[in-house]
Image 1 (tube, rainbow, N blue to C red):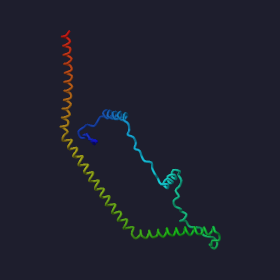
Image 2: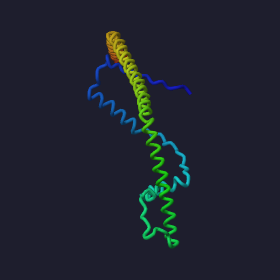
Image 3: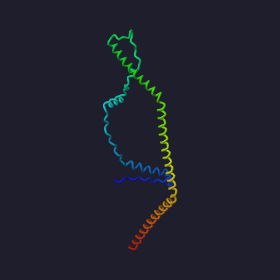
Length: 208
């Protein structure tokens, strides 16, 4: 199967801008072509296959239920026990165990938080500066690429305009020659048709 090549035949520095009437005529032809054309069939997509956890999450989102991923009560201060603070019933012992577990979680979180803050205070500034330096270098490289691309576009635009302006007179001359040739061809065809009719009339007159 041969590849289809598309050629851009616009000559913006030679051709005149189309008039509103010409533009409307072209757009009407496009609309007429679209009216009799059929759209390409849509691509068939595979049915999604999600894991059970993803399906449960999608169902939760569809039902607009709130997300309960983190128990924030574990970070809250627990109520103290009354009197001596010693558990006397099974419920108190269960409550004490739950309080100790939450207190351990809070301590672990705060200890990790303190370590992170210490590391951030010691090394965070340098890491931030190094990160900014890398981003600045990346930004400068992108800006250089953008400037080079714009320069190449400007060079191409200038070269294109120069080439079209150099052949503008020749193109106009060829266009006028073509128009004159077409006009002369039409005039010749009309003259031949008139001559043919005259010959036929003369032959009919002689036959009569």
